Length: 262
Image (cartoon, rainbow, N blue to C red; front, top):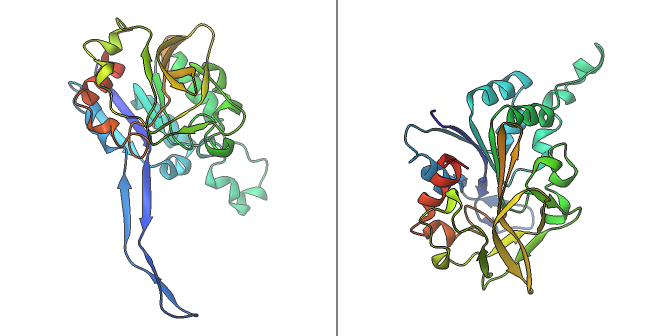
């Protein structure tokens, strides 16, 4: 079956340096829109026959209910990275005041729609980041979402960021797992941060990561109905993954996460 992969998040708008030459006037030079998720997008594009669409989180937020369901009808795999739950909640049309005057305003809940998609056979994957899982100051919000119990890890209800300029020890729990076939995790480059989560009962914790002498899930998987949910609790792109993207086995790992049978 052709893999149709929808990648959301890890895009960023950069506004240039601000120049202040007056107490009244200032100017910003340059604007860039960058897809920091390009490394994982390029990795999954190497899956034979794969079709890949990559969009920023603000485009997810603006999708109409019909557009959202159409995207799910198309996709076999969905990858979220640094996507907070607010992007899945209120559609901008909620703030259309003209609608307030014509009757009740409701939309299909996108978490329920996504959950049904997973249950029917979809593969949903979340990469770590400041707005993934619980995220910075809890802003990710996934532990309080309607998808919380289908994630293969349990989210905190508060800030979950662990960061280090020295990296963290890694422990492979299932070296024979199909997603790890031929992968030498002893060569994994330094990872600079991850989201603190807890293993969920009944899920596979395939790789762990250590902070301050305690082990936490790094790569986990869980079957949900006919589908699957996987989690990689560090970044697949800069900044936590600024070294990870240089790993010679980076492409192979991601191909196997999404193409291997397990």
